[in-house]
Image 1 (tube, rainbow, N blue to C red):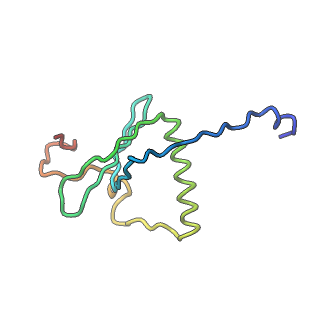
Image 2: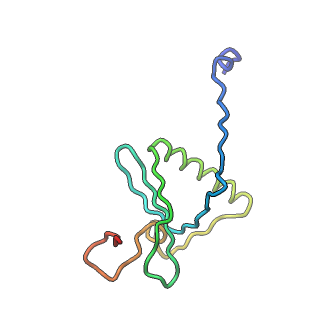
Image 3: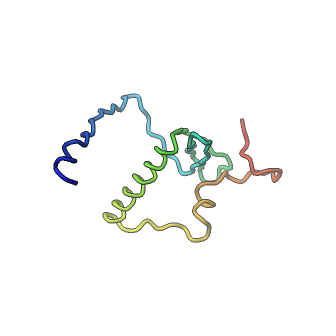
Length: 117
């Protein structure tokens, strides 16, 4: 890129993001991902050992474009993490989706839908 082209390119504006004091961090070890033509929806949940019921702790809705940007940012951060701390090992007995991103099995074999309260 020439100096003239670089001069024409608008500089990114700085955006200040505030973390509210009352913001609570939540732990999630399960994610359910769905989409519509206009949105990507990620429900984060906690499933604890020996408890057959999980709880959704947060729902994030974003545009497909922002979801793809998040995907790229996560990939870069995982690569950085692995350079610093070593490879993150995944369980081999199940696929990633089966291990971490599925609804917990219920007593009912009627359908694969999660139980609603």
